[in-house]
Image (cartoon, rainbow, N blue to C red; front, top):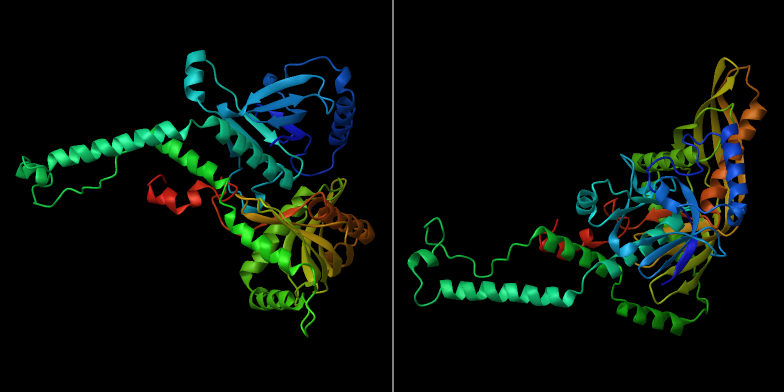
Length: 460
């Protein structure tokens, strides 16, 4: 369907527009952001430009409708800055080296639009055909735009399958006729035997060799099929839910107790493992690196972590919606008092001095109403967020600190980073994602390469 919103679109791959490389607050960044906001407010008064084709990074209000992605200078859509024909492009996720699963939909990496016949077109035009790189402001929006652009390119960029199916049938019939002629009454022993002369029979159902173009067309059709799965099984689920209604269970066990029992049992089995510890260290480090920090503070490094000894408690779970396309929204109240602990290492720069610091941060409590969302296929992750800023209680204490450092100044800066981290990644409209089914990172969802049919046909 039709989709609109603001996107950064550029034809050169570089640093994400309006974002510092190291996450540090700089005067030049503040000035640049201020100028950019002023320019965006004056777009209607600005002189026309060539849009995204001039090799510069820019911010557009875009409309994806059918086969076209139209770029405008503002929501009033008075001036068109460019048009991208989606059927002429292949859509993919562009990743940095050694990317992790949690960074697949990072705001720092773009969605990539590559020309379908870029090699041929570049040769004919004797120039290098540029690509489009698209950035979204939120990870959850990036996933939505990726699948929307992918669907548009596949829906309008693939030829009709009817002719190809008949051609495939013709190829199969030709192969059968050749096989029949080769094994008919007049066939020689050499025709009946194998090429090696060992007397073994040639397989009657040998698969015809596909050309590179045919293999690519089959792969893309499977990818399109992944984006429009069979939803007939959802009808029974929706019917069951409608029959139950919202009546709470009146027995001795409350609705939420079975859920907390399962979560608690899973937590007990895994919370002391090194895998869990390293998983949270990587996740927390990624979030600290995304948050801007004051100029006097160096990069914050997660040196150690303890997940605590209690699992979160979930109360008042409620199914908010279960759409016919498969999207599920669930709300719940989450209360955590498990003592999640971090050891953070950083340094303070005081002129020419560099003073090392090590702090212990204990999450004493965290409480708030949360949203859990699973988007329609082919998404392979669920998204979580608080409806509003949760209540947080932190305890900070120095592990190692030189006397010249003012503890209050550092602790306030670290505490602000933690609050910003929660607000920017876990409070609506921002959502944080977790994978429930592993796939190839470049796919970003359950697409054709995860299918049995893809491997059975030897397309891998």
